[in-house]
Image (tube, rainbow, N blue to C red; front, side, top):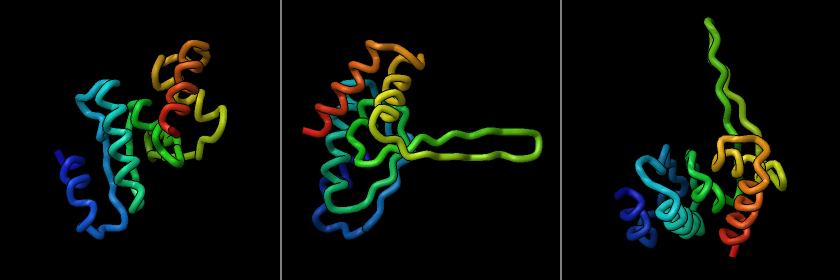
Length: 118
């Protein structure tokens, strides 16, 4: 709902940065592709930070960061790394398949990135 409002009000809303957390909750791949396209449209006029577990949405990002969290008894440590090239393909493939080295998922990830960039 919020995404639809932000898209509709994009011309009059001058907020320079938008943050979306878990925008993929309760949606699947087909709708994820549409959400990714809408997010890219909104991002053309402002900066967006988006947290997602859906590769269909992540494939539309201009920059892709992997965030990991490690919890111990005394502290929680959060790390992030920007993914580029084959590292991004591998991450999208892992998001899809849950496996690190699936050739089918890698091929699909490459196709998603190509489709998202056109």
